[in-house]
Length: 334
Image (cartoon, rainbow, N blue to C red; front, side, top):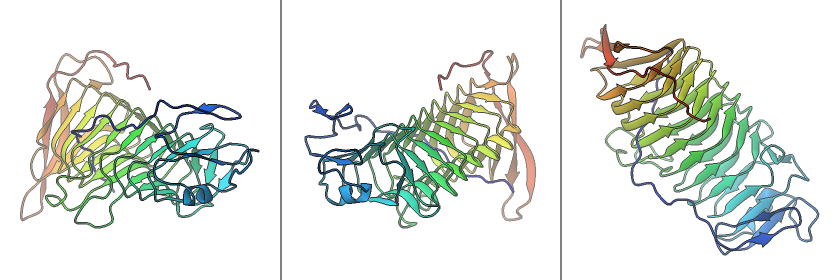
């Protein structure tokens, strides 16, 4: 069964990463907290270090930094983040947080959380987000049953995960790589606007799935070797998919299901089961522009799909074009 979900374009999203000019010397390295708050340490040999990440968060205040050493790794925890803090792992490959096979390894309920430098593994969800203006960067998310990163909602009538940046993560061997969920079309038109950039999303069942979420950007990612689809976009408004490697995915590189105003530009499509497909009650309002389709092309590239008639529900073949396909492979850099 084809799984069709969502991807969008994102606006008004600059200056989100919060930093400070104040440096703090640690025994093993220097870090910079996201504000002028305190630093709380987990693991390691320092005086007053916490043994659990959750204990440090419980004792933190908004603006603090929780720095997690890899000395006591792996940390077997399901961590709930309910404060606007920075969570900083000492080393992405060796600072391991393990969800013991269930629940969310990290659940973000507060806005303006910065989470980076961890290996996140063995949970139902890797990082489940119910909040806004977060930065999730430079993590490895692996062996998760369902979603490596889930930008989720608490009610179907409105979005609770908005204006987040997901960047430079390795997301592999999960059920789903990244999933973005919005509310009902029209009701949540303002919401679920996120940037997904520079990630390596490989060897999952599905790469990126976005449903009923609007105003999203997917750029500069390597989305490869996923068992089913690389990208699913469904019931979405205003989506940009630009300069991604979409290669060697089992069924489809990208599937559009009633996705409106979707721009798919300057991507590499190579050796997917089917590079691109669309389903809807009309051809997708949007464009495929200057993509590379596995080899240099002089003629337009045909993109096949299905159009459903209403109310009968019958389908008929249809097609659209990438009128100016690229003659050479793009250097995406991931």
